Figure (tube, rainbow, N blue to C red):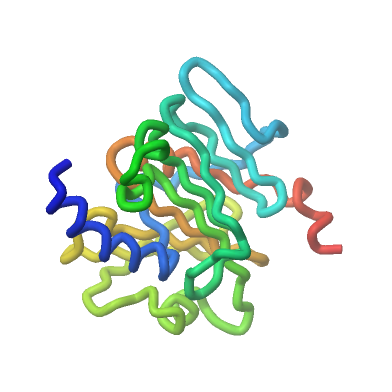
Length: 200
């Protein structure tokens, strides 16, 4: 990638990390979410891996073997609103290189505490996640109270965000490129029983 292209993407992508948005790059990406019975945090299979977060109740059932899972340090979180969890699925060669902080991950999953007194649209607006020009459409997902896709067509990729609200959290996914779209389509919520201890 040319230096000019990398530098032009730095400022915009840094802003998107700060706002902690979620992206979906395909129309059918999160319309067919089912329940997962995965119990192992990472399961290696035929050139792909699975990640399950039982603390925050979600799983990404597929990510390419050439990708690595990176987790933000919660004490260094810079997002508004602050995320209680954020993981990135980045290509291993990029993660190990000097441009790791400038190249968008294939998929970013952010988890935010739910604001029960507000509708999802109101929460996104108050958090600054609905900039002018946003195109909003509903997304139906198993186990989700409300889902919204936000598209910013005037922005370069990543420019589509999906927000998924449950009783406890708002989940955000930001895929980038074709493989990011595949990872996003594999996103599932874990059964309530797997995180029931969090409520007691």
